[in-house]
Structures are given as C-alpha cells and as structure tokens.
Image (cartoon, rainbow, N blue to C red; front, top):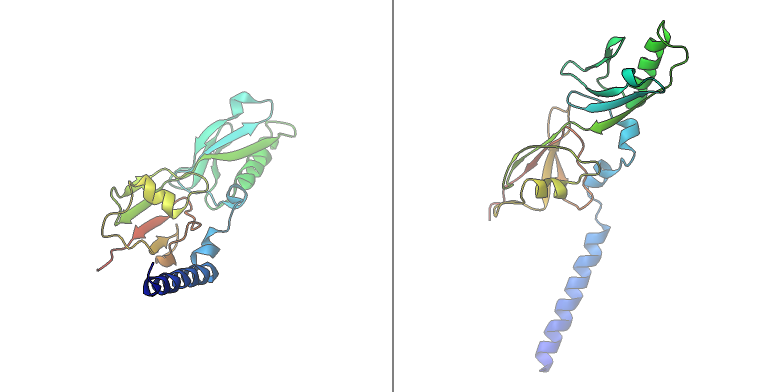
Length: 192
C-alpha cells in the first residue's frame, strides 16, 4: 500500500475513534426521560388503562376493569372508585377501605395494570397512528411498531408530548429514550 494511502487511513481511523469517544460523553435530554424502571409502582392511572383487581378469597369481587373516560373504575359492590392520577396501590387501598365499610372483614386487595393506555406516533413514520403500549418501550421500538422511518425522517431527534402536557419537547433520539403510556411521539422531517 502506498505511503499516501496509509496516512489517509490512519487519519480516517483517528477521526472515527474521536467521533466515537465524543458521542459517548454527550448526555442527551432523553436520558432523564428514560429513567423510570418501576413504572408500575409510580404510574398515574388514566382513561384506557385496564386493571386486574384481586380480592383474596373473593373471586366474585375480583376481575379485570377499565378506567373509564371520566377516570373511574366500576368495582363490584362499591360502584365507581376514582382512579385518575392514582397508582394501583392507591386504588387497591380505596377498594379495601370501601369493602371493609360493611361488606367484608379485613379485605386483602391487590391491583395491577394489565393493559396500559395506547401511545400515538405521527410524522415521518410509515404507518402513523395509535398503538398498544408495551412495558419498557423506547422510541425506536415505537417507530418499529409503526413500520419504520420514512426516507425523509430526521433520525436524530424525536418530539414527545407526555399525557397532560401542553407542548411537545424535543429529545435527542437515543436507544434508551423511553415512551410512556399515552405519549404522542412525532418524528420530524429532514430537509436535505
């Protein structure tokens, strides 16, 4: 190999390594959005979530229930129980308290989310729309669910509007950028 070409390859390799080193140290704004591995314990319930409520030794009082559009869960014997912006632990405690008020002595109640409300994706993806949320979902897996990026997609940024927020926030698109139930994701268009 001629000396000129070797020098070119050495410079190219050094630039590539420098690019890798600098990209690893960049902290994206998406990283703070990604940290929430205990979603089930802190997740605020909302319309469209489906819960499994279990009352120990009472199969007729147990079952699967949806959080309605007005933020309530209709439970056996006690009727509608507020669930919007509460955790599953809060709903279980409320149900146990209501059952203890004249129906059961010392009821043991647990609740868990079995189906989260859907997320929405639009912009430069092949099939924009509403999709079911899967626990641990990232923006990349959401894009894959929507059949991938279009050729004009800007693959370095994603805009996310979290449920209840007025405006979307721009994030650096990283492999760890998480999606939460009810999020609206928009993939922008590149201009060249």
